[in-house]
Image (cartoon, rainbow, N blue to C red; front, side, top):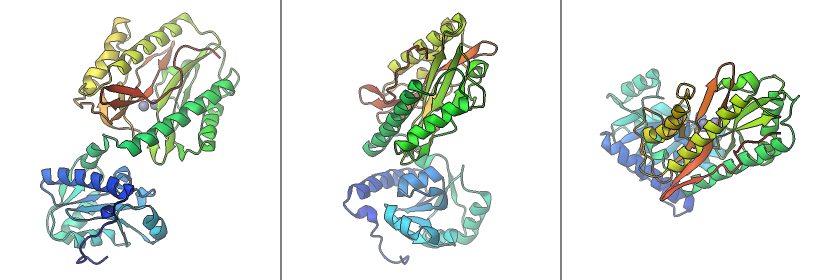
Length: 371
Ligand code: ZN
Ligand code: ZN
């Protein structure tokens, strides 16, 4: 469209999708005003998808002004962009020049953690003024999910539960490699219609369970192992994230103690999730409980993180986080303990913060079990 045409964005159309886009754009415009800018160039991939609904966000950018919003992409995506985008579509290879011209009268804000220095300087050269550097502007809006997003997260969690149930009934046995379990989890998710996996799955058995991020290896699972499985499906861009620990045959008493301590800490922390609690307070619930059992140092990471279009996003549940939980936020609750030479356990649920508390989206049983 020409720069002089008054904006009649698709967002103005009274469809559910248009309404959703309008609400998101209004929130972004409010935040923009607060930092003294009149336009925002969005380059961060998940933010591009959030505002435009474009499913190839790495190849798109969004420009938000006070009266318009555009998805800017190139000729490979003409059909897809028109089909998916909740915003007006601009097809051009010279996107930064187009953005500078379209927002010529505005102070343009950029995403400091994503905009390259070269693009920042190009924008300054084209507009004759310094772009405004912003941090987490759209990300903060994204922390509170709307009903559509919650439905997708619920579905991703459901597919994750389903894949776990299938693996428990079949593949997860002594004599099987960790990678075979990871493959089977992925196969079940894709067969159920997931976009794919939410991240590289962790299947850490035996001594490898002492590594919080032990991605599935070719190690053969043995009897007496406690196996940590951390995995999730991705549905329409939304991620699920769950961890379960499963014993393969009877395990050593010390490992069982670690499991029981972790489960108690996880359940206590889940019970504490409600609007108004801070990330720091939630983290302390699990940490204090583990400290009482002498496992303070073994809990070597934070309690959890927000989940949505990114696997790790705000709010943060950690000892240093002042983030305050609000209804509509989705967070993980995942205490873990790791002792070299003994092993490790982590238990993780995906949890929605509701008006009066929480709703655990991960439904798979998490109590002690041997296969
Ligand atoms: Zn996880
Ligand atoms: Zn997680």
